[in-house]
Length: 300
Image (cartoon, rainbow, N blue to C red; front, top):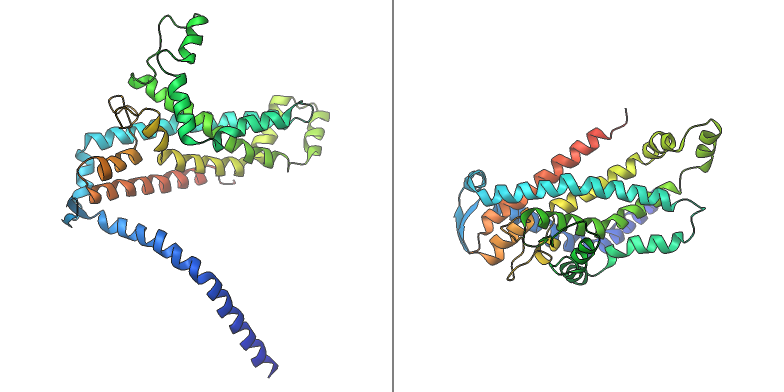
């Protein structure tokens, strides 16, 4: 009898638990799982607007023949290959420097570096567009220091527009990754470093032989997050390099996959099926790159 009472109580607890979680599960299915499945269905549809029909693998073939898609893919991978390593290295260097207990004003410096990632996108986009204008403070400073002889066309030259986007993303998200490294560094036993100093291990060797290996999992975590964020890059290119209401200028030099999806859906004649196909390209890239990073960082 005691067993039956215990079983009945367990069932009531299970039902109560499912009752509490059911609203969250319904919302999760409605706003996440259903859109994912619908986008997969739409990726096999062709046509403009709501006049679409089943096209099989026509959208996949169209990807290989679309120069704009290939250009956007190249831009996205360029941002990924250049910006993510720079940001990860800077975040790690800042974290190690600001973890030094002998450094004065650490709290102020930590706040200053972390502050950009909580700054409004619109505010910092306007700030960057003003600072990097032809007559902005950046060009004025470089001219004053005689580093350049004429203003750099940051937003009118394809190369410098890419550089501007990389600078903007790095400025905004370096502090975010730095916080993870700081938290991990503070969990490392100081006696490990003390023993290394006693054994005569130089600072550089301590960094590469102790700090980096002990932060391996956190570095992997931040690298995967940064990879996902860069492959979905949209906000900065749609605001900072916007021209006449359209981002990605000049000459689509900063056009990314996410921005191209947005253009296909809202700016051009809507092509929902093709846009959904490109969104699944991002999903596949995220999966492949994350898998590769986990393989490279696996413990031997």
